[in-house]
Length: 144
Image (cartoon, rainbow, N blue to C red; front, top):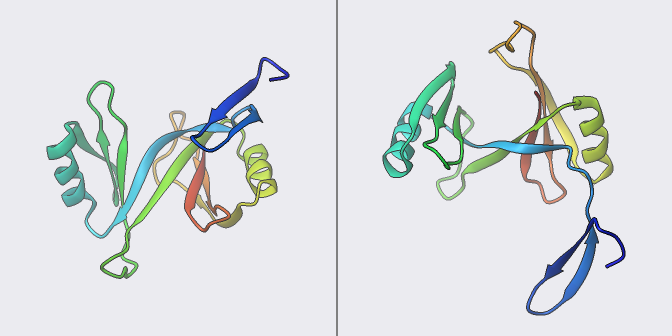
């Protein structure tokens, strides 16, 4: 390794060194798109613990017990084949424009821009952008 920021990545077949890069944010929660957010939140609460809380219509979050992961359920009426489900990550970022530039440069494609129906602590609008990674998986960058 050449620098203190290098990380050893070891697998049974190969050893390689990857330079660490400053993160643009962190995963706030995993979001499951579904037709009935309350029903799915209650199901997962029965398995994992926690309390379902409606942040705004169509968005229910399972607030976790200590050491648990936050899990949210977003209303979606888009038809889904029986054997497919949609999951995406919400990534909190301090600078939405700078994070956008980095993910697009890395190969992501922006598909939508939105504003949360729930305002921030000072009443300000909270924006987010929807992307697809190079393999087509959805994720959102959310201004914190």
